[in-house]
Image (tube, rainbow, N blue to C red; front, side):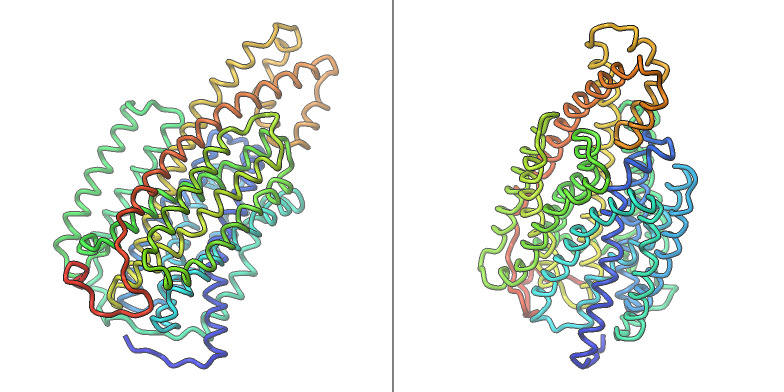
Length: 530
């Protein structure tokens, strides 16, 4: 690749454009996460709650390694611009959705373009900055990711309670236009390896898409199907066969989407494991924490968004200096060990939150989670970019983001299964334990509406206003019982998240440090063929 010489002004504007692109794609997840309880209630689809997230993650995850490889081959600038424009169009369609199935389809479309953006934003740093500044900028861009999560919940809550949840998607349009202008005019087009379209691994791309889709759909189906049901087992078997075919293809083509030789590198393989299992700290918390605030503590969407802010502030505070610290600490893998241990502690504490918990207690727990989580983004990206040759930076960086995204998709689906399988039975058990009363019997015809309404204080008030006064005590009893059931379900959910994150904790102990700031010759076992 040729290297363009940029003026300081061009560097600043190009960096701003790429950072805004990352902000655009990352902001969407946290803005929509806060709006999800309201969306599910208005579109009458609480049972599809995790599908909206899963559809987005399936598409973005499958696109990541493909877009990363294509960026290495043809240059990253065209993919950034195309990804932004497609993301804007898909966001508009999401905002126009009239049903949960429609929203799921449009979120999947949005996810395709989000995968292109995630694959390109970190890798394109190599087109702007010299190797000596890559670790530092990885920390800064990790902080940008955290900033998006910092402002996203508050913005999502404000939009949901104000102009409506549809604006959680429409807000992407002006940001995308600004990002497109900056990227198109300021970012250099560093051409890739000069490969032809005919050399693209189309068979690998197709089998990767085809294999991930049934895998993640099977995990999502476990919300209303047993793990050993024919539907789930059939989809898992199909996924295994297709992903096996993908691995077979990748070992035989000249330009694989996923160069399996990279897994011979300790730095890459261990970083991929850390990214995969630590992802549950971000998506598991951001996706399901609104249920704690809106369903358990009875806050509005705006307040629940604002209450997520401390966690994201902690992410920013710890992510920003991590890249610089890695360059100064010989054994920087222990930064990850300590950080993930802190994140696990926060998840365990969050699992103890009950109906009588205070907002300050929850805030303490999520700050602890965010403080640990912030270190993991620059840790894995900077280590891999230092440990791989330049011609594999794009595919290596996109692979780390791929494994992080895949982990988020898999574990969000699993946690959604825990929620969907445990919560209805828990609510029924809590209601059955209430003293029998005519009001509860009369309320049975309205149980579904009451269950949807208790996530939104305004909607709950409207629901109560539509009922005869004689049923109001029964509604209060039902809501109290439902919140106790939700607390128990979330206790299990966050303990599962802590157990998953423990695998990343162990993996950090095996990360081999490589020199940061320069790409000197690696030991033979760390060299990777193209």
